[in-house]
Image (cartoon, rainbow, N blue to C red):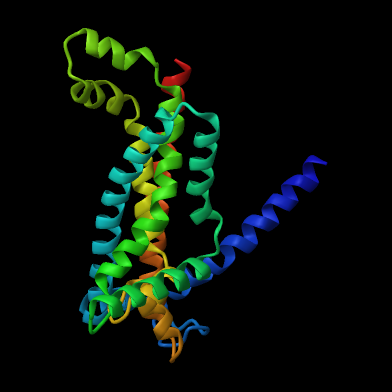
Length: 265
């Protein structure tokens, strides 16, 4: 059974990462073909630096990812604290259910519904273009919030209930006790929530596609390139994005493991 389980896991890993491995391999292709290897070269990585269209899309993506991650982290932490403070079990379950809906909802449904909402509001207030940077940012904050809340809530449950009261007894105001006692104890949850929000925003395509208008993010630019002849510079750019996201996930897991070790001690 152990041998079969290892084979099963190996096949899953192979089918998951074989396409990524092929993409990385052909990103170093010396020719313009995306299926015939013609030498080893870094030319396609160099071409990214001079491709203003890609660089502009990358800048747009990073701006949206950073701003949405920061805002959703602040709002999500505040929401998690509010949900944790609810005493009614029914109200708390209801709040948790409402929080989970955006995660369980299909991206295409979320994208279309947000698009219709933004267009309706834009027509209502007389905007010439209803979709753009602001709508993409709001959409990203919307789907990032539940992930931040779910990252912070477990840390709040692990926090000693008497911690804030002890800070109050030592002379802190309620606001000071929150920032000096509660925030440090849940800081790992806040940081992991930020990383998760940034990562999800960085590689989102479906929701961004329906809410972007003329504001082009990197996933949308790559998608538009695939409609024409695909060149290896798309592979090179995708490889860079893959390793950036991979590094963030490694950092996320390292923080989680460190937090578990501290908790066990």
